[in-house]
Every structure is written in C-alpha cells, then in structure tokens.
Length: 74
Image 1 (cartoon, rainbow, N blue to C red):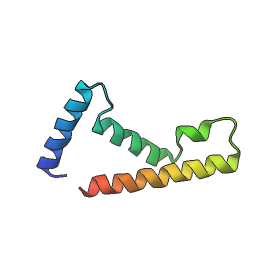
Image 2 (image 1 turned 45 degrees about the vertical axis):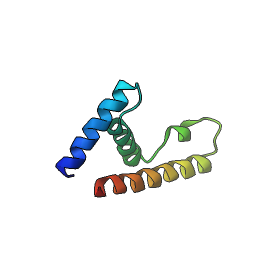
Image 3 (image 1 turned 180 degrees about the vertical axis):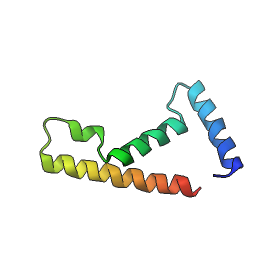
C-alpha cells in the first residue's frame, strides 16, 4: 500500500472515530476475520438449517474475500 493511501486511511479513521463510527481499519479487520473464519454472525442463529448456515457462511466468506481483494489492490 502506498504512503498516500496509508495517509488517507489514517485521515478517514480519525474522522470516523471522531464521529463515533466504526473506522475503516476496524471494518477491514472485521472483514479479514470473516474471511479467515468463513463464518458470519448470521450463521450462528439457532433457527437456521445447517444448509442455510453453510450458504450464509460461504456467502460471507466470498463477499469478504472480494472486498479485501479490492482494498489490497488499491
């Protein structure tokens, strides 16, 4: 990641933190955790069938992986 991109992220983090919102860095960390685990919080709901849990977990993994790919390429 370029120094310009790192500075922009630090600036965005500061503004979001001041506004009481999740920072860019926190969101990226959450996406990385989702991609690593391959399991979203929704998959833990007790009323979902095992098949639906697996579909939601896989969908979360694919979505997180794609977003992280775009962020890492920037």
